[in-house]
Image (cartoon, rainbow, N blue to C red):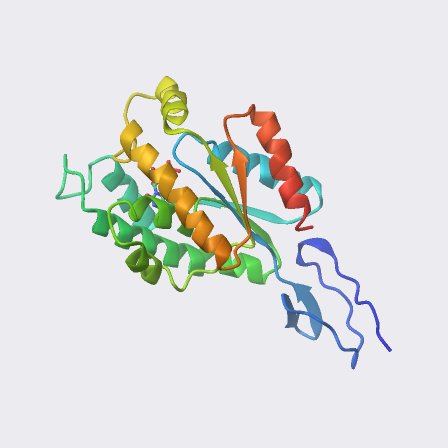
Length: 241
Ligand code: TMP
């Protein structure tokens, strides 16, 4: 005999019939009740590709579908994330005016991510909440592998929780550069057209590798109008509901 267990969105507790076999790969038992683990969604792309805007839209849409959503981002606003922002603007204490080494960036981002995982992402997922992050490990694989070996960057990040879906907003470096140059004139260390072109190529290369390993990555043409991109993102997310 088989029985269907009611599953409610957003990790709401569902009743459990004792003795009924359940296929529950991503479900957790808590206090005798069954709880679904949340999904982890990450937005990625070069600077100016719209990760912040689209992750906000996505979180709003998921909420409108009845889900409990945590919005977050990297670099974080926690201790290591704050150091990273100083390094990005060449103001790391003791290294003012300097661009720090690619290896130091890789280590800082990995440390920030470990803290982010332990302090925010994993606890939320375990409570059944969905997590939408503006950037995560694919940023490190793409950006830091331009200056360091990809295998080493991956090794630093080997403990991270992998995304259930990564949305890669793909955009040409020239277009992206023009987009954010309209809004501000201070550029961080990765924001030159040459570097952005290399990082875009790196994103596409690393995404291929991760897809071959089984990760779910959807690539969206971010040169389209914002609402067209948002609609394509919603289509991709709908597959997870
Ligand atoms: P933001 O502009 O999205 O706030 O991100 C800050 C910069 O940090 C952006 O240029 C991307 C870069 N970055 C990395 O190089 N590696 C990482 O792991 C992350 C999360 C961001």
